[in-house]
Image (cartoon, rainbow, N blue to C red; front, side, top):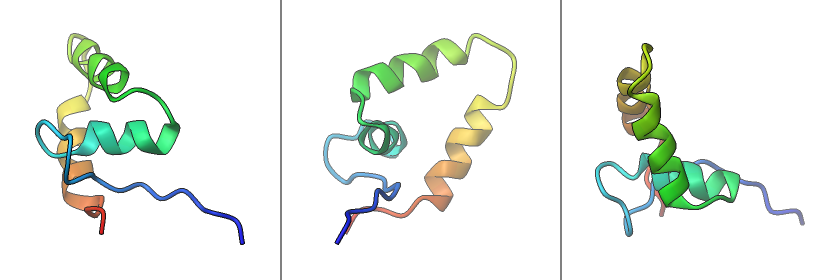
Length: 63
């Protein structure tokens, strides 16, 4: 049976809501890399903060 990836916020190792570390796990990259991308993207105009809050509300916590 194939293992399917699911996007989940982690309970451990998170800084704020667990969104960045959950995205890092899902895409197989470093959590620091995702956090750095998010912080750098905040310097650009766009809905980054709103997207983060939506992911925080909509993505379930890991079991």
